Length: 437
Picture 1: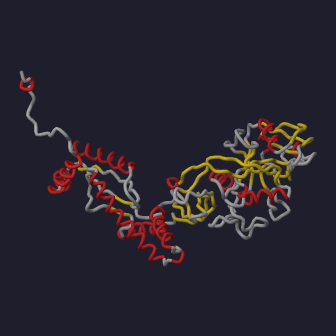
Picture 2 (picture 1 turned 135 degrees about the vertical axis):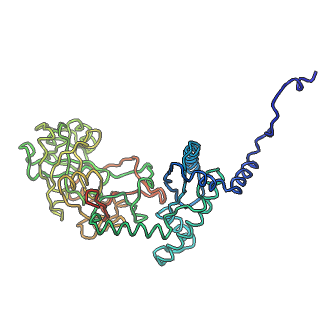
Picture 3 (picture 1 turned 90 degrees about the vertical axis):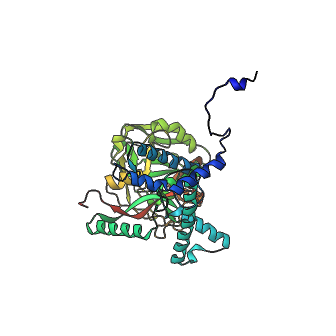
């Protein structure tokens, strides 16, 4: 008996195999032939509007799995809203400005032996525009190949002259209403690319940093036990010391005032020196800086120390400003000394605490190429990434550092140049959200 004849199945035109590499282009061609997107808009023109604002990809290369995931999820949302009877008008877009595109053009220049700084600005911009236009077309075809429905014949692009004119006009309106103003703020900066980077352009890699234990001699103590003492801070960024304007301690942290009575060979501190640091970190710190014996003179709370005025570690060498002790709830005893050195031009928390809360001015200390500015004594011309060991040694020679080490840790890098980044105080434009505009 032929059992095949006894199996009753419905007749179907579905092939035994999907053959999707052949079938999918045929389906897409059919959609294009009947102009399905326009027909959907026509049939739903009076329906409730559903708009998905498309966060645009950069027009700077082939699509990857992240692009596919993003657009397919958006397509699912748009199609489901359309099936619910809404007019889901999806306008795809592209970001045609910014470093990712400029960096690609600079790569082409380097291959040709050209220096970007010698290329006229108009020529450079046009090459960036042409590059973006090319990849916009490529990505559009690739998105359509994924089956994503949208207004692919009329997308929005940030480089469209109409869009740029609208943005310029709106910015002008904000300016005339008094909501636009010039200010300064520390931002993540690439000394290699000489530009600020957005969070999405940063990746973290292991990096070896020079660390220092710097001392701030107490000038005006807030507690008698601090008379003649040195506040000890630890930092992985010696290059920020010229920009130091304050220190911070934790209100409820216990701090010990110690007299050094014994030290190992090579220790930079001296017998008789009085130092102050978190009680919980005494053993760790004294071991790191070669101190073998200490005498505890007093134990204080952070609230006892707040308000103390100290001298900069390079006092007497051009850094004559007072360094106040502030309270901060982010100070911990997880690492370091229990004190944090505050450089308001080189960190967001430092900026908020010193500048915004206490009105301490923002100093300019680092140029766009990563070199310490010429007006700063001792360190002028030193590079913030290459010369940290030299900065540490210079401070040690002048008595401002009592310990030097190294630390391997996760550190921000540019996703293009792969070079380490720094926080740098830069002039910025701000739009006030409190004014009438």
